[in-house]
Length: 66
Image 1: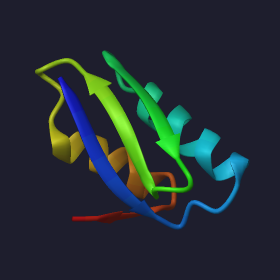
Image 2 (image 1 turned 45 degrees about the horizontal axis):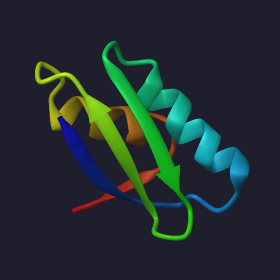
Image 3 (image 1 turned 120 degrees about the horizontal axis):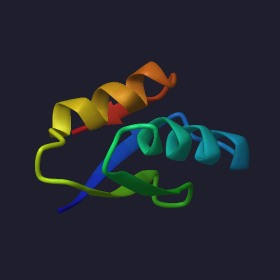
């Protein structure tokens, strides 16, 4: 599955890497964060919930926009 989540607070390459690392720590998840569009494109297994993805972003210190 692919999910796109809007993220506030990413400002630099370190932020991008932090979001990708937080999401990538979840089994079955790969992600590419996009600073310009303020979002992450996330590929994940069907058993990984959107709430789990959002929690990883929030726990990394960023804000999820719906």
